[in-house]
Length: 363
Length: 145
Image (cartoon, rainbow over all chains, first blue to last red; front, side):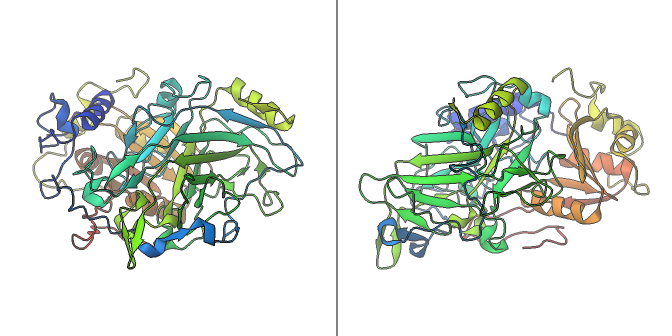
């Protein structure tokens, strides 16, 4: 006996999972193939953890800092610097792909773990391409729908969801990737998800190759160390102050901001590498690319959340917000990360590059 | 399934492999580990590979049948292969690991592939709820963390 789930079935299962989380009780991953609920993988021991008994494993009070008390800083490890400035290629291309209003989530990671279905130990938000799952081919991505207003952008943009640990059970409360692994509480939808491509302050950029894969940040930075970390947390009105290893507590009226400035230097040949990192590089402090790399448009993603500031009393944090992550990473802010596959039509990529190199602000 | 996928019989890869001598009862004896290019490995299991990534360090394809799809990747270096596996296995999954090649898919597909290609099976990490006890790391050698 083997699973005969098809790609279309899997999508159906996921839709069902979103809509009928608590009602799904089929515990057999195979054998009830005609019922949509069959794909909802629920392990008996983890199912139905009641509200108020959610175990997150983190974050702790020391992971938060009042943004008004910190000095302006940049990323501590030199990753994630903005590549653009007043010189070089000063234009930009902004793509409007929404805020995942349709709640497209899964716990796969097509770049890092292809073929691992329901695999990742955290839940992602997807905007742009609507067909990203563990077995999506380049062809599937090129043919899938997109949430982007410009239909020439079928790129997939995905990041771990942010949650408020408020005792609420989400659709994934009992599932691997969700509540069964400490990713608990209300999934917060960003109030803004700004996605733009900018230039390089040292000169022109060249087009990204189609299907270029970039992962930025390190979901395991808490245990791996910060070599690949790229997390920037701040608050609206305070974005000259960026935190790389703390969550901000924003004053009244100010919202939480997650920023990802991607690697924007490319080796000129490869859309991926064995460790998914060495075919691209971050710009150096002066905006230049390392030897052997050429500047491509820099993807800058800025997510804004209208989230209740956590309360900290007697060294304990109540109802914190936190990124989804691997359980042993304890939802540390340094583990924030962001993933991208370029699925621009050739014509649109040319237009974006022209805008950037000619100093125009396009959308 | 998309018509552009590998041209496999409706029986699917597992069915094809089952007919070829690796029975479903018990653990079949694995042959000597296969070697070769991605295309050569794919042809040994009757897959028309859909190439996704053709990069210097890694080539990666989808072999698709009727629900039996799996990923096949080849590497130019042992270190790159191990790095690729280490990050992938953090996300769970079922793997068949050979000499500079890896297959990823469901457990049945992986078992059937092993009957044709040899190699060693590896399981990705599975996590327990945070605070709910230790963490299981089954057959996950060489994890760096």
